[in-house]
Image (cartoon, rainbow over all chains, first blue to last red; front, side):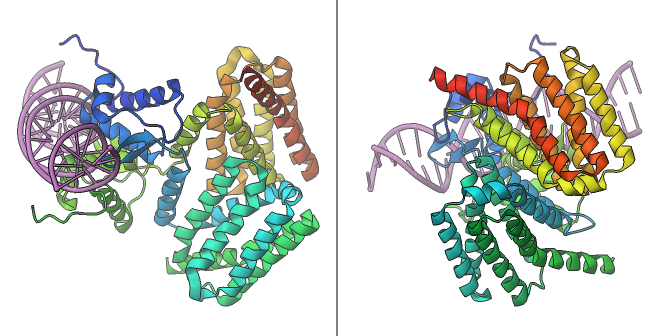
Length: 243
Length: 243
DNA sequence: GCAAATTTGTCCGTATGTATC
DNA sequence: AGATACATACGGACAAATTTG
């Protein structure tokens, strides 16, 4: 029966909050250095184990970034935890392997559709030309150069929402794209015809944006995601039949 | 000079992937038990420290759930890591404290706006009545009963996107609401008039949905978020003036 | 209700790998 | 290259929480 307070909350969790408090109070910014592990131990009254576990939690959330042999720093606060979490969920998906993927495509189209008017009005000539060049790249590179293809596709969707001036939307958009790119390969049956259809729809999207035609922009968006939706529903049908 | 392989990747990270692999290969589902720490140590060839740090990382991502004195289980795979990450970013926000909040409101309206047609067509009479009851609750409970007010508000937005059948959209919607609820209190100046305006807009939203009027639904959405936007831009103006 | 068994939480000491100067 | 500072990893011991007999 020592007089020590039987802290209801786990010490590790208090260390997590202590580090967060320190970052906020000192108004630190991403990349700024944090105290070393021994310093954190003394400052927060915990052992190395507890401090290390707390740091790993914050590292997983990208609130903290650890560089081996160098030090601990404030993280970038990116959406990497969302990507990790959603990716694993997509790979797990008990029952229906592709439900998450279908939902994901919905959300991706939702974001671009919901921002359609702003995208159309704010895309400048230079950005439209850049989009056009990406479409050309996609058209030229077949299934032979997968690497360049997926990279151009990623860049296209990132550039599409870039002029919004909403950093959160940009990061969410690329995060959802990343998850799709990791989960989708389990989706075979994607033909060259599908690919061509998708690229053609991208061209229509750029044309509609250049013309300032919001309804056409939305229509092209629907056509762009149509092939993926077909493949997903076919895969789901196969799964259902197998069960 | 031990014969151990000088793993170029961190051992801790390999343990993380090993646990993930185990969950996938065994097709475990949320709530299923995982091996104990000593068992994981032997299975993955790592010390308890490394295993524990790996488990904490997976716990932060809600891929694993740890219960003290009980065991380790497969997590719920919720979006809690997104909430944690975004909340901290909102509290940090160097330079402009309310940029993240403004972006957040944009995204919340974006989701509801982008799903407008589907929401209007799929909302059944029972769900419309439930929404109406929530609006009544919001109207009756003033600033006096904050608890019930915010709870009803949360329920309203959750119920709005529920009939879509897209679990990801539902979880994203509530996640963004949660982050707003945590970050927004730093935003004072919210008057009773603002509150009344927001509640009235919610009534309009329900009316429009009941009438199947998509344009009116969208218009009401804009009116619903208008007061919050005003408060945010005022707060940003105050911040700018202070700097 | 008590006590034992199981499992996670915390601490300490030590040795190793890595990056910087 | 050597020295230093730091994170990484190990193993053992005890504390705290939970379940079970």
